Image (cartoon, rainbow, N blue to C red; front, side):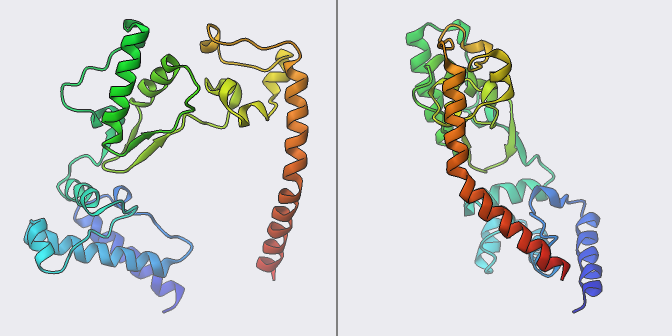
Length: 251
């Protein structure tokens, strides 16, 4: 089948979902680099969708051999069915992380808790979230009050219904990261903010926990130099591969 035929077929499949008023973005990862694969995915989902609209039941679908909704990313049978049925019934497939907590659960502000109360609440909320696939990957040495506040901030974020998530609190921007004093990578990379401050830069939230030691900038710059030396061979290989790929595509 020619590329033009594949593109025509792709549009027909997308139009079929538009007529059903079902937004594909919520259950499909597209494959623009291989339209043939994308068309197979769309065709499989369309067949499954039409069969479900006829049967209106997971149980009947499974009895007739339609065991798993062909949605992407697939997580597990139960999670995939949850998202698929919400999607096909026009219900939200996106939820806030805090909606994973049990109904009626009271989220307590850090400022309202003593150290002992906060330690207990942190343990409790982590256990409840982990049951839903939301795992805490924050650095353990970070003070519990900081960890708790990071988790509460993240609870306002959104994800796909039923999809697992690991919160490691890392954005790649070390001067703004509350885990930096306890993070090996954070102590290896020198940012412009560090040089401008003349010392390792920590966010304001950490003022009651840590402060920059004298000579911290020099230590950070030396760590960055060693890091760059270690990475140089890998970067050279990567750049060579990129150049080879570019030459191949031009040919």
